Image (cartoon, rainbow, N blue to C red):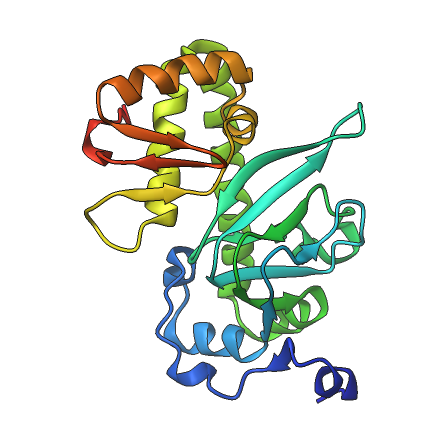
Length: 238
C-alpha cells in the first residue's frame, strides 16, 4: 500500500471489503467473482462534513461508489456563484466517465459532503486492469453511462414539458427518500429554498409559493435552511 494512504487517515485500502453488505444496484449485473474482483480494487475514503470530495475542473481519474452520507453535486455559474444540481446518497455513484481512461474529461462538477461520508473509490487504472480479465467490466461501464444518460434525458423532458409544482414534488419525494432514516415518519431535508429551486430548475419565489401551498396542506414544514417532509405519500411521483 502506498505510503500516502498511511499518512492520510481519511484514505485507506479497505481490508474488510469481503464482509461488506452494502449493495449498489448496478453491481448486481456482475457475476459474484467479478463483483469481488471490482470491490477488492477499491479504496475506502472518509470525508468530514463540508469537505469537498472532488472539485469541478480537476482531472477525472476515479469512480466513487457512495457507501455512507449524503453529498451535494454543485457547479459554478457564469455570475461566480454556485448552484446545486443534485443530492446523492448511499447506493449512488459519481465519476463514471473516469472509467473511460484516456478519454475521460475533467470533473464537470464539485461534490461536497453534507455530513460525514464514506465512498469506495475505483481508479481508472484499476478498472482498466479489471477489464483485461473480467468480461463483465465492459458491460458494467455501459450500464453506468447508460443510467446517467437516462437520468439526464428524464430531467430534460421534465423541464421542457412538466409544470414546476409537479417537478418540485417529485424532487422533494426523491430527497425525502435520500435523507430518510426509515420507511415512515417526517424527514428533514437540510437545504434552503434557493438550493431546492436550483435542483428543480425554478426560481426561489416560485418554489416558495409552491412550498407554502404544501405547508398549508400539512405536507411539509418550512424552517430556516431546512424543509421537513411530513407526509411523503402526499407528494406526487407520477
